[in-house]
Length: 143
Image (cartoon, rainbow, N blue to C red):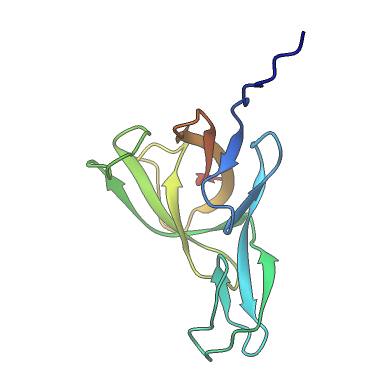
């Protein structure tokens, strides 16, 4: 006899569906951006108007998965709700034609990190929500 109430199986879900898309397994994906059709300005995530020309006409784009580390800091006191290791490296990575994207740098000891390093986008489980779903976040790692 089939149970009338089926339990919902936890899933892997993106931390922000507007700025990233992930595969079903939650192991790979892309960051999403917008490009202004009027002036060509690029943005991370969905935009409602262009900061440069005030246009509201945008095209959605997939952002590159590699970039250059422009700056970083080592975080010893994490924000409330942080479920990762401490200390950790927070890096700003410049992508082609887009603004810099800030996220955790992984797989690189703080003694080895250097501005100008090539970085690769990766997707990792960053924690869980109240329903037990695994929240997938984007991070950077050296190429």
